[in-house]
Image (cartoon, rainbow, N blue to C red; front, side):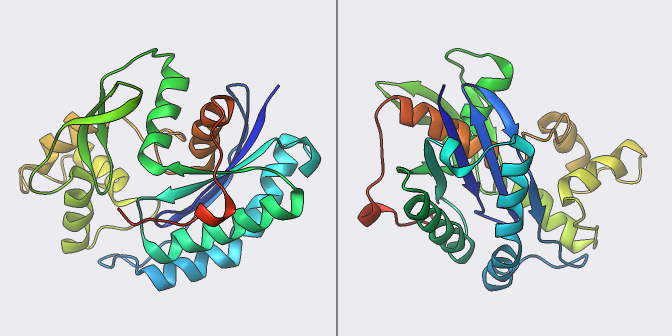
Length: 241
């Protein structure tokens, strides 16, 4: 059995997940919430992550009933995302990997979402409509890598919803998109930038594995680790794109 721990913190959520052969053993997280009408700045988000990441790590080990010795590999989000939060996660993941004497794996954030989707839907070779804060893309696996076959040329759906929420000062707790959806169900939003229809077409529900979380990084890392991939310490940098 292969056990991988994953660290995610590319935006306002910080999470640590543990996966063992396709089974999610733990997936705690924290969210940096800003007041209605405000976004989250990289420096303040990073400060939040630094303050809670070790607590979330302890929670993950406790939930999984595992010890560091039981972990086979440490995976972390290499990017894309916000620079300062990504650096916080990378530093912790590098430190943990060295302290525990475990191999390290840098994971692409988008692939993390896709691999978690494959796990929970049991899809073998899906064509993916990837909808997130910074991306709206059609992605599929071809010639041993994920490739983008089409994407929005103006603004990602997630960014569109976030901006709209800031304009009319909708709460960021638990997320702008979720709160827009609840208001749309009550018919409080009607034809505002046509977002009511956009919301219904693109979001079914914010399941615990759809939002940013550590388990998706652990799952992608599990697939990579079993395929023989590793990240040298010298190459364990981050990228915002």
